[in-house]
Image 1: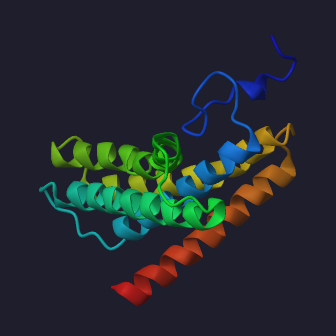
Image 2: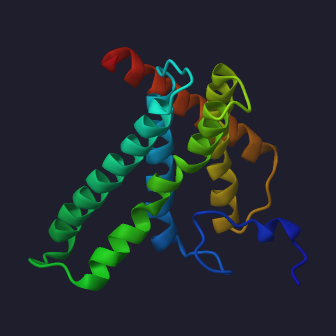
Length: 179
């Protein structure tokens, strides 16, 4: 047992009981942030009512972003590695590193589903889903501290707030420019 209980933190960025090394964690964190920003940008302009269209929009955003990200990473790797035909291992690696994009829609879709079946008000569900996404984005700072073998501190909280604010500004700019 470790003397640091915070090291028990596990999440979508860790695929086994031991944390990933930096080389494997970095692209997953990047995909995680990217996916959450795009899901939030899709979520904000939704006008929810009693149908399931919002859920489909979030799922479509996650899936299309996942496919685009895998494709872009494969092309980038081809330049980096000089390989003409990627191996199955390389392709699986790209898929695994992009999975956090898909996970970004999971909790918001569950929250919107609760509104669809009438458990909560649609506007409350939308607001809750937006807050969850912002918490997920800010929470990455805690994961980065863990990868750096650092204890969460006041700087971690400030960093989480800063990352959340920057992501929010990015989302606002995207929503304003595209809707």
